[in-house]
View 1 (cartoon, helix red, strand yellow):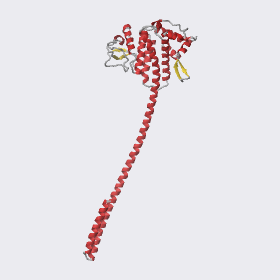
View 2: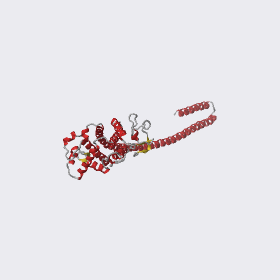
View 3: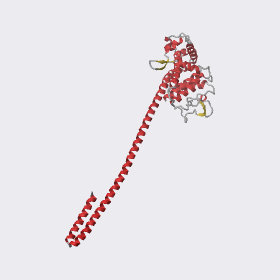
View 4: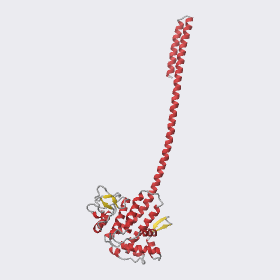
Length: 361
C-alpha cells in the first residue's frame, strides 16, 4: 500500500510539471512534450505495476510451498503421534499383564511363606529344647483325638509341615498355568535344590525323611479344591485327622510319612538345622527382610559344632573349604546364597569360589 501511494505521488508531481510546461510553451511543443511525459509516466507506472505483480506472484508461490511443507509436517506428526499412542497403550497393557502375573506368583509364594514361619517357629523350639517332652513323645496316629492337638506340639508341627508340602504342590500346579517370570526363579531354586534334597538325600547324617515321589504324593493329598473359594487350599486339621481314621492306601501313606516326620521333629539334627536355614533363607530373600536371623545363627552354630568337615550349605570358598566348616558367628562368617540380596560379596568373610557353588541358580 505504501509503495502505491509513493507511485501516485510521483505521478501527480510529474503532472504538475507537465501543466507548467504547457502553460509556458506554444501549442506544438506542448503536444510533443505531453506525449513524451505521459509516455514516461505511463511507462514508469506500468513497469512498476508489473514488477510488483511479479513479486506478488512469486510470494504467493513461496507461501504455497511453505503451506504444503507445514501440512506435510502436521500429517507426519499426527501419524507419529498415533503410533506413539498405540505403542504406549501396548506398553501399558503389557505392564498390567506382567503385574497380574507377578501378583499371582507373589500370592502363592506368600501363602507358602506364612506356613514356613509356623514351621520355623517349631524348629526353633526344638533346638532351644522348649517343650521337649512334646517333641520326644511318641504319637499313635490311628487314635488321635482333636483335643490332643493342644497337648502335643509335635503333632501340630507334623501337620504344619505336611501343609507346607501341600502348598508346594499347589504352587507347582497353579504356576504351571502362568507364563514364566523371573520372580519364580529364586523360589523354585530353593524348593528343588535345597529344601527337597534335605528331606530326600542320603548325603546328610541320619536317614532320609521322605522320597521325592512321596513329597509329591503327600502334597497332592494335603490340598483340596474348595467350591466356596474356587481355589485349592490345604487340608484343615480336622480333615487331616479324619484321614487318619480311614483304612485305605491313601491313609496308610500319610500315616507312614507322619511317623517318619515324627522321628525327624523329635530332636535337633544336622538335617533339621539345614531345613530350618533354607526355610529362613527363602523367607528372607523373597520378603527382603532378615526375620529369624537370630534363629539362623543358632542353627549355623549347631552345624559348626556337629558337622563333618565336608558338609556344604551353599558351596566351597575361594580357599576350597566347605562353607559349613568355617562358620564363625562372632566374626560374621556365615554361609549364604550368593544370589541373595543379603549376601555381601565384598565384606562377607565367607567368600565363595563361584565355579564350586552347589546347585548354581
